[in-house]
Length: 249
Image (tube, rainbow, N blue to C red):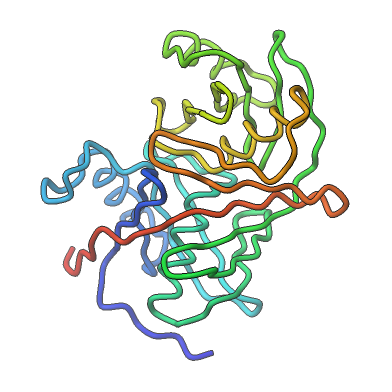
């Protein structure tokens, strides 16, 4: 497949309220620092108080791969909404409706369902646990799941627990099918979190015996979530839209 050179420095996409800056430019230190600043203080014409993350895409032998960073410049292992946004970005330049995206160590199978709707699938090691009395699951990134209304104070405290690793965990609050996630690297609640929606659905299935698929409601919109138990594949589907192209540095 011949690579088309983008005329844009970066593009900004929205995945049910989760926003990302995406570029084909190389992930040099200068480019990382520039996009980190843009995410923390977006151009005024965006109408956003922040951009949640930024990613550098490249072509590979088997498809595409990214280097993904949180808003604060820390490396992110996985992001479901970013995978959907990256898929639309790739489609708009290469018109591919199905491909593999290598997200760090995770292989994501991306498929366009209809206009601005993408399904992303990836394998997880499904081993739910209990930490400090709360449901814990890793859906690509770690999530503590609390069956209660969102609390910023509690989220900040739990987010810094060192288990399962030194970078802590995201904290997802669930009320029925409604969910809200406090995200590492953003250090705030986001309007939507794809891996958080998956964690909420797995909580509802494990604890409340709800059947898949589920329509999880985030403040930014609806995400359709499924889990293929035999293959240990999580499935995330939702809407994506491009906000703008920035053509100059």
